[in-house]
Length: 152
Ligand SMILES: [Zn+2]
Image (tube, rainbow, N blue to C red; front, top):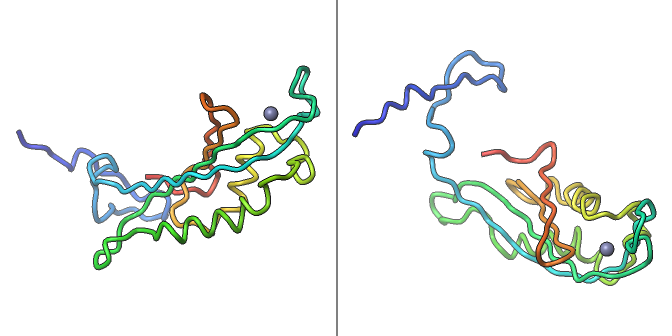
């Protein structure tokens, strides 16, 4: 069965050009590498605008994940060094939040607002940042995709 990629041609609107991308295949036909790195920390918080138990100071064992997308270097075969990802997340996020009261530096530390805060601290420090995921409980998480994230 043949497959006509010309059907999927798209103009380069974002660059303001009128031509076509060198590789006109849509992302799902091009292959993609995605790195996901997971971290845990413990912290206290209270939700000042919440009508219920979470209004009171309490704690969580949080889990967070960063998701990066990019192409491996042709020679090394590596997109990003895992140890560089761990170092950036530790310095920018974990050292600040672990064993703290999140209300000391996030005014209304809901899972959504914490994930946004994490994105803002990590933006520009992790190549190809796509998502920050945050779990307060094991069964539900918030996924935040910031305004300048990589899309593929
Ligand atoms: Zn809570």
